[in-house]
Length: 378
Image 1 (cartoon, rainbow, N blue to C red):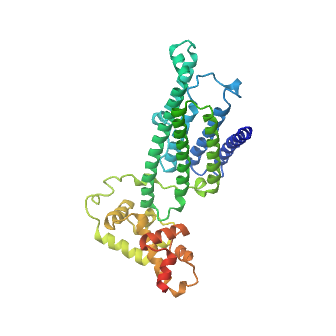
Image 2: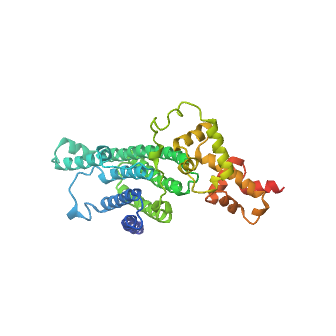
Image 3: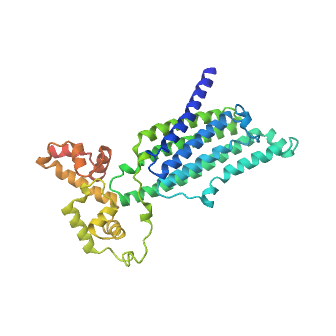
């Protein structure tokens, strides 16, 4: 037991240090390229503070601790709201100081208020006597609130992310620079934390208050900081996220598009789009976006979006990548391209990575590139 006690303390110390280090790194002027990193650094710092407060407040840091009634650590209620604000910024919704933003932290403020209020009551007060004699119930309510809060926030974060993915596919033709893999990993970490909260709640219900729960959470938070810090530093997207201007996705004024919202797309514009795609091959540009293509065609972005969505029955992402897949097929049969390997053909056709190339090619042909070229050679 002494070994595991020391090991947990080492992990906790390292987690706090890692959280502070990554926070400083994210706020370096050469690194912080977007506001989302600022909110991520605040989230990691809050997790580090939660570890510090849970592990040491009232036991080690006695001189700096405010005497309060132990309803549960209020700092836990900071994590989910800060996660939400980070995702807001990451998906292009600028967070501003407002009553709505402050409202996210009301549960934390309520927990602090009642902890201080109950501590001010005499020990003979009936409410204090009841809470002291029902510690398991008190602990269960706290962890129930934590599970509910995390679950609600994760639900809305997942919903926001699905909406953002749809916006991505309406604007870009390659998604490598929009941090999809990073966000999935990030969400997985906090889903795991919520599952730990749920397990603690179930144990409290069945076995009573657990004095090891705070140490367990401190270790889990420390390991989470390791994962987020390590993955974040390795992921270019966390430092140089090519964010989509989601403001462009808001409905355009009726004066800009007088009648296209009620009429079918102009067939002449559709023919012009298809002719341009065949003759100029803009899809060979891996950085092509809906806005770029609209400028090349000298039409508004909203009109082009309608041409593709309603006229072609597809989104921009699939529309462009279908052309890239067809171009790869042409390259496979071109003797002049024989010196390229399959990945090289994909890159020449406008794809940005091997994984995306294989995924998109199989989506539209039912075969991987290697399977398709083998079929051609048989």
